[in-house]
Amino acid sequence: MSPLAEARVLFALARGASGAGSQAERLQRFYAPQAEAYDDFRDKLLHGRRELVDLLSASAGDHVVELGTGTGRNLEFFGPRLAQLGQIEAVDLCPALLDVARRRWAHAANVRVIEADATRYATTPADVVYFSYALTMIPDWRAAVDNALGILRPGGTLGVVDFHLPAAYDHEGRLSRRARANRFWRTWFAHDGVHLSQDHLPYLRSRLSVDSCLERAGPVPYLPWLRVPYYIFVGRKLR
Image (cartoon, rainbow, N blue to C red; front, side, top):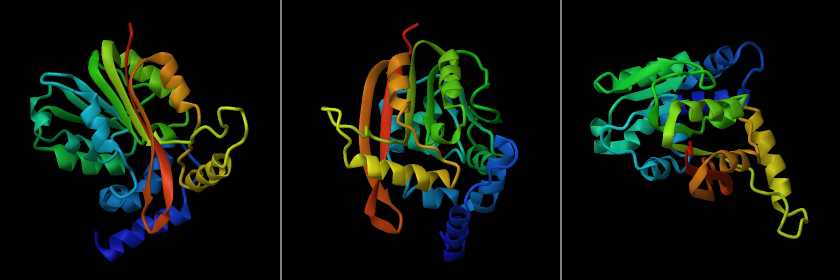
């Protein structure tokens, strides 16, 4: 990424996301100026995406849906397996990011890039649905999870990787040092329209049979002394 492109991304992050307009309008206004440089910067910040794709265990012929695909970068983590999958639907609400995704996957006959709302998108039953750093950007994230479950066939796999607020209390119910860090991360990300929550994992656990649930922390670009918390969740639809 060129210094100019990186400066453009940093400027957009420093300016923050406007709260005016619809969700689609807000996303377009925030991401359009940085769309072409989006992946180079986010590859340093959005941890655990490749691991999530590996944990999904999508196999040949599977119908796969990514809700909140952005630029379609995450599909590259499937590697050679991608060509063996069945129908792949990459869904997002931001035209600027979808333009990048369409150029990226124009050569792939089994990939469709679709502009749609993750809370309402409908398709034929899918074997795998996943979100990668999308739920924290969807105002009604529970509706997005519920819609994903509606898309999944019984026994299908739902995967999520996203930023996370770890439990602020210890096993004895005392406020831990994490509480102060959680307040920092909540404020930091909200400036850019990303809303961290402690409710994601409890809600996912309540709706699915859990295959994997990992809580981790990764480095932040230019701020090596900070480690941002994130989680990887994979579960199965029971019925």
